[in-house]
Amino acid sequence: MTYHGVFVDDEDDVFAEQLSTHGQLEIEFLAVQEPTALARAIRDKQPMLVALDYRLDEAPAGLPADQTFKGSALAQHLRDASIEAPERDFAIVLVSAEDKIRTLFQPDQTAHDLFDRVYVKDQINDQRRTVRRELLSLCAAYDCLRHKQGHYDLAELMSAEPDDRHAIDIQALTLHLAEAKAPHLAVKLILNKLIDRPGPLLDLDDVCAHLGVSLESGLKLAEVLESHRANYRGLFGDAWPRWWSHRVEAFALEVFSTRATGLAASERARLLTERFGSRFEAAISPWSGSEDELVAIACASCRRGIEMRHSVAAFEADLPRFARRRRICWDCVQTDRYLQAAPALVIDEIDASLAHEVRGRARPDNQNRED
Image (cartoon, rainbow, N blue to C red; front, side, top):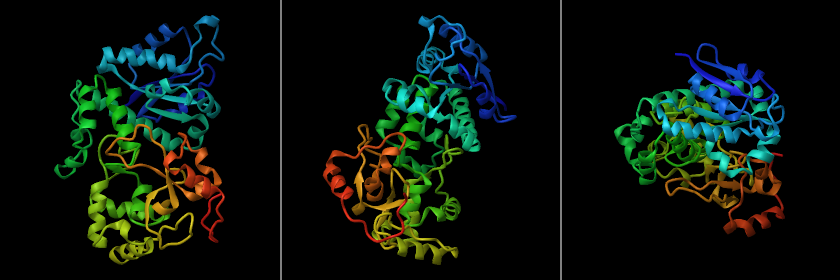
């Protein structure tokens, strides 16, 4: 099956081809026109995906000054129409220059919920295969959800087996999904609450940290975990690989015979190596440079495995009860690397004084710092 999409920009038509995948997703370019007419033209195309630049008012092709608009205004118009016709709902992604995203889109909080994903144009050039895979995954998800006619079963959408259901039998998820009136609302819930946050699902960086191995050992670990059926196979799992948290915990208990994060990273790596006959490298603390730390989670900034005692809490205003709070390693605090993260990271006020102290603290003599 070939999905169809449109890309709207006031200047760059080249990205329509770069976002397309031959034989699977064909995206055509649409020039800017009056917003109501443009929204109608998009809906008439019956796309599965729409990509918008944020600024559609820089080269408005003869539009009067009072009729120019931003991509967020068009996205809002399209989302409103999808509530009335959910069977024709489609993915909307933002494709714009980095400076526009940083200075215009990020401060516009009301626009964030309108887009399923946000892509920097340079990112598309550098990571074209990944971006295309993600766009195809979005199309497949919307195609699936369109056929559900508003009846969204979370366990079914996540391809959960009976042993997985307890992990997602969460009122905050099931209630909001039951209230979703269109596919884009279901997509928002699954992406924002489950795919993008550590909780019932973990990404490979967090899995590596939990099992005490380096990111370089991630591919080997993924193969082992797949053979133990710990990998997530539901919506978006084809483009955003995730692992069932409770299955990873069960795997760890089987291999380590105790709670994983109660063992030093070096010991966990040794036990994995002995069990599976392939060498697993231990996670090294970004701060102490030691393999003997109780590495537990991936840093929200650098994604290396970190231990609780050398990290600070990240502020998350809308952290669900079922999600894990993210943390930032001392290395990223002292170097201010966490300030470069997108979306932006903020240190929780409960650890603000500790972070201030860390910035002036002498570093251990280790070679694991990332400048």
